Length: 288
Image 1 (tube, rainbow, N blue to C red):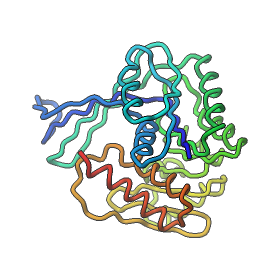
Image 2 (image 1 turned 60 degrees about the horizontal axis):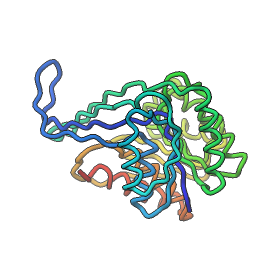
Image 3 (image 1 turned 60 degrees about the vertical axis):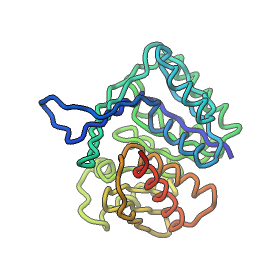
Image 4 (image 1 turned 180 degrees about the vertical axis):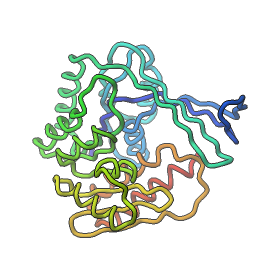
């Protein structure tokens, strides 16, 4: 089965390792690497690592596209990205392994021309001929309406496709109203969505069930060190990860989305799907 991912605002991840990182002073780094990134790009990579065929689309700046093209060739990901003028943004990640902390500096990205948005929707429609699952992941670049994910979800649902949504802020709110198959907010995003703090697991579950009312089949809430809550219409399951050495939290949520899609493809029940998704996430945080 081929799976497609949509990354509207990808980034070149510049990851700098700085142990005992401090602000407002000079820090000495231990290493630096550049990698093609963005939540949907990460999901596509995890999928091919797991033996699935993946295509990736979204917007890429023409001026620095080579790093993505090399990565797609290496990972055997079908490149269906729409090229736009300018540079794909760079996201800086400062990884402090000594204190198990990651600091992100995310830039806004380029504004896609209206013609590129039309091309993207056409590209997604073309991919729906061969892909049954789509993962819509990440933030929006400047200039795109908050309804863009909802528009894509409506397009794909009309063609009988399954959709995973992992975004934030107003794009998450508008996207949920379109009823994607599964949604994966973290606890902060869910609190923003319902407009009030969620003090305990009962409140978190109630908020998740409000999301299900809009047509989704599964809501997964990342709760950090408290694990993740998996809620469908029939039941609720909390997965507590084992205590493992954390190399980096970068990509952990994207790995979980990958595990959720794979679990659905394999027809797993909620507990087994939760365990698989958690295992994918654990694999991401324990690798260098």
